[in-house]
Length: 322
Ligand SMILES: NC(=O)c1ccc[n+]([C@@H]2O[C@H](COP(=O)([O-])OP(=O)(O)OC[C@H]3O[C@@H](n4cnc5c(N)ncnc54)[C@H](OP(=O)(O)O)[C@@H]3O)[C@@H](O)[C@H]2O)c1
Image (cartoon, rainbow, N blue to C red; front, side, top):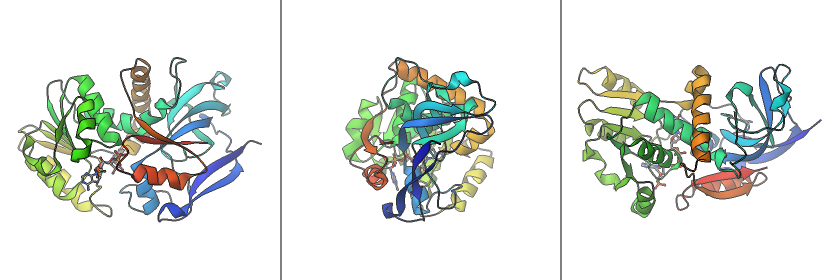
């Protein structure tokens, strides 16, 4: 029996609630492959889940977090072709990725080309798939449109800037002054937080919520679209913001408002999400995407990885290596 090491959120709280356990690796069920993880991404959402501040569905502790992972298929479910074995893949795991082994639906994993070595693919499933969905499925951004991105120096923010720029949109990124050189590196115009209101954007992507969300709506161009995908300014789930988005969207003024959640899309449209991940792997292999990895931390040190992810000074993805 293969043994597995996995990070466990034992209860809600600070980094001290993280533990590393050893148990038998799960056997892949029907339609699943098991991935021997080489690198798993740590995200803001993991920290919010650990702290009990995630505004979506969170498993009840104890559970293993981890939205994305790359590695090698080491076992396949009863109905999955054996040719999947030993393939290098990347997957949106949604949960359970912070482990030496994780099972995922075979229909959702994407094989990596030999030309793509290293861990960069682990940066794609959560941040880049979300950004791609926001740009192309929700806001349907057109080349030349003016797009304002809040939290632009963050994981999803930089992916939005990069993919939006590749698409030919005029990207503006709201960030603290120390991050303005980074925003420019991604081909976008830096915007000070306090001046984010009057930009007259065609599209605004907002993960702050509260007052910022209201300013985002007011600052939209006629026929503009506001897309919310997080509520970092709130301490808990903000039903007021969600209700407001629905009401704004119903107003007959040509503007639109929506909320997007990747986990819901992954459940409802698994083929689309897989196709997007495959497209992004292709772009990465062609050298057209440049995800930033700031730290590779051993799986045995999850608290260090959470602290590094929380450290606003170092921009980029933190990876856990089993
Ligand atoms: N709905 C979805 O499908 C989906 C998918 C992925 C992520 N998310 C959510 O999106 C949000 C961002 O995730 P991420 O991984 O990109 O996080 P991240 O890498 O930590 O980046 C967050 C960015 O937001 C800025 N920020 C933090 N608090 C802020 C505030 N109160 N006002 C304005 N800016 C603030 C940070 O800048 P400073 O460090 O300078 O404060 C940072 O640049 C999280 O809420 C996450 O749960 C949602």
